[in-house]
Image (cartoon, rainbow, N blue to C red; front, top):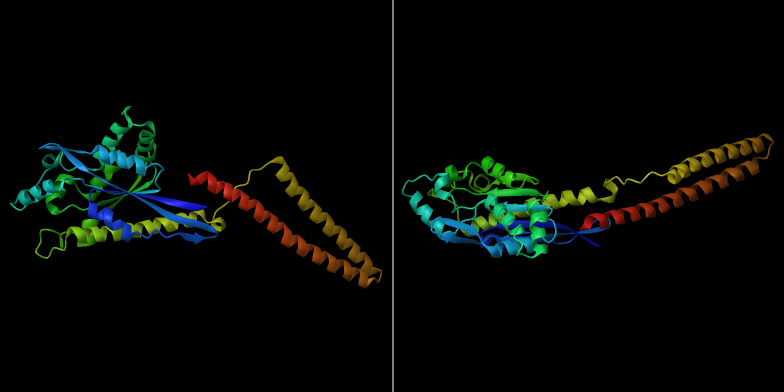
Amino acid sequence: MVNYFRILVIDDDEEVIKRLGDRVSIEKRKFEGRTYQIDLRTVCIRVEKVDEETSRISDATLQDLAAACSQPPHVIFADYGYILKDTVEKLRTIAQQGRVFTEQDLAGKALTPTDLAQAARAFASDETVDAYKRHNIKTNFLESTAKLYLYSYTSKDFIKALGEVSARANRTKAAFPNCTVVAKDTRYEFYNGSEFDWPNPNSKHDGKFYAHLVGGLINELIQLEFLERILSDAPRLKFVRVERSVLSVGFIVALGGAIGATAEWLGGRVVGLASSGLYTSAVTIVALAVLFILLIGLTIPFAFERAMSGLLKRSESDHEG
């Protein structure tokens, strides 16, 4: 049986989504007799215009999101900003003229995970939508308890409008209250803040290169989370809780008492035989006792291991969904 580690990546950049297939390693891993594999699911956010001043998340995107959330993700990766490319170009042209944008300038144009959550809630409450899809969005996305990595690039001209990384993380946490939000500032990670960022002459910012770097960052974080999941599930590293019952407690007590009584009886017999000069008989009893102990020492752990394996398999089945 394969234990799948489900990853959901949400981005509006088709180049990022496309490169994830090459950048993220999803090979099966085997550890302690178990097989693990990454299940990578991606959703490309498509933004559509409502009018010249307003954009929205497309219905097709929400359909894709419902399909990707047919099972709850273990980890979510989400880009912070979703904006039409022609809108970005227009805003950058204005920025080059020296204008600094405010939050009002980007309202309705630059969408965020908060807008995605609002659109998802509307989708989940729309009774004309298939109930299964509504359930997926509501339970496995909006109410998800997964760790959510928020990766965010914002050039200096848009920071005032979108806020610092901590503010973006707080807004995302408010939209997904059950998630643990971890913010990653890709502007700092890739360009050391403004040193190599657009529009500096030494800028290293390029759409395809950025997508390549983001894919590498996501892969690194996925592999780290994947390893932690494998180690947390390892049979030799996890405690198995066995239900206490009158029968099990009685068996353990009886077994301990039987071992003690048997040892006391054998000890008395060996001492008695040795005192009577029957050394051969005494040595024979000791040898047989040692052999018996060895056999018991091999049999009991084997039986215990089989019993615990059954418990672990049942535990795996309970958690697999």
